[in-house]
Amino acid sequence: MERDTLPTFFNSPKKKQIRERERERERERERERENTVASLSREKREMTDQKKKPKAVIVGGSIAGVSCAHTLILAGWDVVVVEKSYAAPTGSPTGAGLGLDPLALKLIQSWIKEPELLNKATLSLTIDQNDAIDGEKKVKWTLTRDEDFNCRAAHWADLHALLYKALPPNLFLWGHHFLSFSVSSDKGSVKVKAAAHQMNEIIEIVGDLLVAADGCLSSIRQSFVPDHKLRYSGYSAWRGVLDFSGNENSETIIGIRKAYPELGKCLYFGLGSGSHTVLYELLNQRLNWIWYVHQPEPDLKRNSMTTKASSDTIQNMHKEAEKVWLPEFVRVIKETREPFINAIYDSEPLEQIYWDNVVLVGDAAHPTTPHAVRSTNMSVLDAAVLGQCLKKWGAQNLQSALEEYQSIRLPVVSKQVLHARRMGRIKQGLVLPDRPSFDPKTASSEECQELQQRLMPFFSDVPAILL
Image (tube, rainbow, N blue to C red; front, side):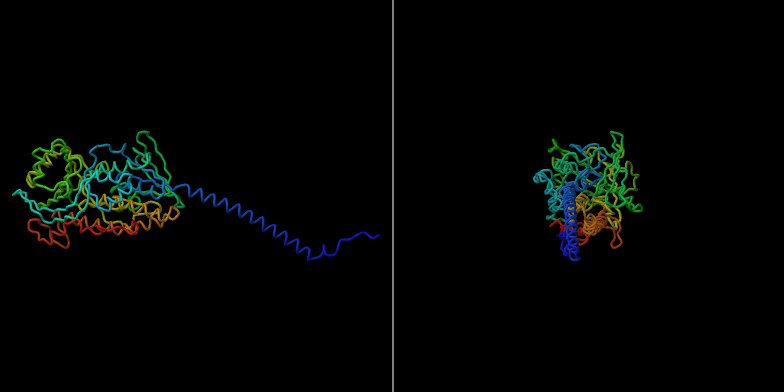
C-alpha cells in the first residue's frame, strides 16, 4: 500500500496566509496586553500624583503670609512658612492698629473655625470723619462725615494671633531668615535657602511655588526688578497705642471721650496746617493714634520701616504736639508708652507680580502709604484671589493660575496705591499737579469730599472669582 500523504491543502499558500493572520492576531493581543499594563501603570502614577499635594513655600509670616497659608491650604496645597521672627506674637504690643473693610472681614471669617471670634477681637468703625483742627485756638470742626463706613478696628497682634491659631500646627519655620531662591531649569520647582538662627545651619526647601510675602522691602521682588525703588513720601508718622485699662475714669480718658464722643465706632482724622492725625479705639481699652510729620528721609536700619525713638526725641515730639493739636489729644500722646516712628513709603506700581513659579503678595507686590486703610485689606484680598486661582486651575496649570491672579489684582492695587498717595498728599497739605495745597480752614465742601475713604477705587468691589 502506498503511504498516506497530507492533503495538498495544508501546504497551500492559503494555509500560509491563515497562519500568518493567526500570528498577527496573537501579536495584536500581546500589544493590547502591554498597552493595558501600561495604561494601568499610568493611571496608578496619576492617582499617586493626585494624592501628592503640591507644595508652596511662603516667605514672610505677617498678615499677608498667614492669610496665604489659609487660602493655599483650602486650595489643596501643602504649605511651609519661613519667618525670621523667633516665635509668634503672644500678647505683646507688636505693631499697632489697623482697619478691616467688609470684604476682608468676610474672607477672614471664612478661614477660621469660629467666625464669631473676629467680631470679638475687633471694634466697630461705622463712621469715617475728617475734622479741621485749629492749633492756636484749640478748636475743631467737621469737614466730612460718612456714617456708612462699615469697617472694624483691630490691633495687628490680635488679628495675627487669630489667623495663626486657626492654622494646622507646625507650618511655620520660626527663626529662619530667608537667604535665596532658585527656579529649576524646567520651571517645575523652586528651591529656597534659609538660615536657622538658633541651630546655626542653612536649610533647603523645595516646592512647586514660592510666595513672596516679605514686605515692602522684599528681597525676592528686588531679584526680579532690581531697579525698582521705594518712594519716600516726604513725611513719617509717630504712632502709638495707649492702654488705659484700669484708668477708664482718668482725666485723660474722660477728656478725650468728651472731645471725640464717638470713639468706639468712629475713625477720626484731624487735619491741621501741613499735618494730620488719626485716632480710633481698639478692643480691650486701647486708643490707637497716628501723627504724620514732615521730615527728611530717615536712614532705614535693620531692614525695617519702624524706628524706636529716644527719650529726648519723644520729649521734643511732645512739645511740638502741644503747639498744634487739642490738649485732650496731646495728653493721650504723652501718656502712651514707647511711641515709635514709622517711615512712610510707597512705590510706583509694578508691571507684573509673578515670574515663573514665584508670586508677590501684600506689601511685596504693592508697597503703599496707609492713608486709605488699604495695606492689610489688600493683603487679605491678594491671598483670597491667589487661593481661588490655584484651586480653579490646579497645580498642573500653575502659570494660568498666576496669570489670572495678576490680571485680577494688578489693575486694582495699582490704582489704590496711587489714590492712597494722593490722599496722603492732600491731608499733609502738599501740592498736587491738578490742585493747590489743601487748607482745612478754607476748603470748600466739594474739596473736602475728596478726603472720604469710600472714594478709593474699587472700594466695595468684589472680584468675580470670589463670588
